[in-house]
Length: 521
View: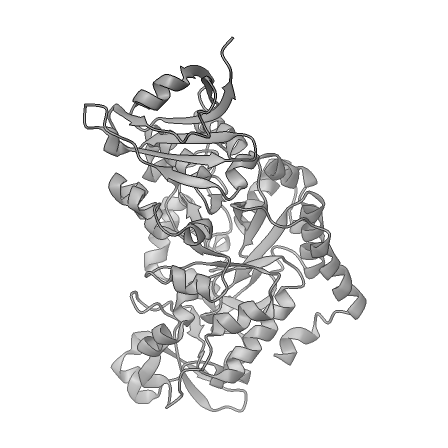
């Protein structure tokens, strides 16, 4: 660990200055908006746009101002750490990846293959991207605009050429020659600094094939845990939080089930790693990539936000009733869930959902409780999923219709009412044609106003009736301004009380009403 830190020792004055950056910011608002940037590919795109080489230090402040104007609170720079050289060579020769490159970037060359940003040689900025000083400068610029910086933490594994592989092989899951003979696709050969032969496991999720450009860390080794906490302490000087890759793999039960034959009698630590980590950095923003129903457990261990893949899957597959039941979950769980329609692992939203489904899907994903996660290129309606091993992406034209839709939705989602604590999922009653089950409706209540969102997740016209609470319709007349579609409706309170608010929406359409109360003249 000392070797990692010696090249970037910070003075007490520098540390105090960096900590003061955080104290100058107001608290992060509820239900924040996050924008993910695949850093190397984004810089390549900027370089092409501006006609000059581009590192983080060269990014015009107008780029950050644009994100702030769209309502984003957090910028997640994915892939800033030094990529593994060994991993890059593997990425250039692994046949299944080559066909993905063909699809994502026709005409690609070997020089376009930078390697996986999740196979890390060192936790220091990749020279292709910038320096520590650049990260510090970017963070300050974001703070000046009221935004925060999120960076990667890849806890499960390192690249095979990380210094620890030679200097601290005991930090890794190790096998022997018999294990290698039995499963040669799960281990690689290495040597320690003193020349001892080592058989080290590839990193893996037990449900999938090993990641053959990585080395699996051993979280039952207390020395490894201490080293990772120290690494987090260093990272925390340059960002406001971390997005933790595959966070559920570190849970004691999961780790034991996956690696028990190779733990050499080590017992599970008394405390979960994530409890120790989040307690050590209480003012940090902790975001977990999480699957396999581990989200609630990770929230209880201190994560502020956890991925909500289940909502994504249900929206993608069109299971409206399951979406409704999912949104009935505990408020705390809802408000700490990360809602997304795409990220660097998922296909583009424009491809998955299609333009016709986006009005309803995007309104819901951006206005329900929780963190709202948007991927670079999503707002422009781009259709080709980038491959993280590539340094650049193909040229695509912006879909102006999609861009205008997202711009309007983000402007609405930035309103104060959508960042409060008073949210209610509403029942939509049948109006006679038995289509109300395709409608999802919910109400946000601010200090003096309400926002009512209604989305039709079905392909056909749907109708239903919504009965609102008395505090919404306590005046003689109620004005419903559909801020999404620029329409205004005035309803009499007596009719609303007797018949409810009648809703009729085309397939995959949406309303977002600003509700005002006034007396009839």
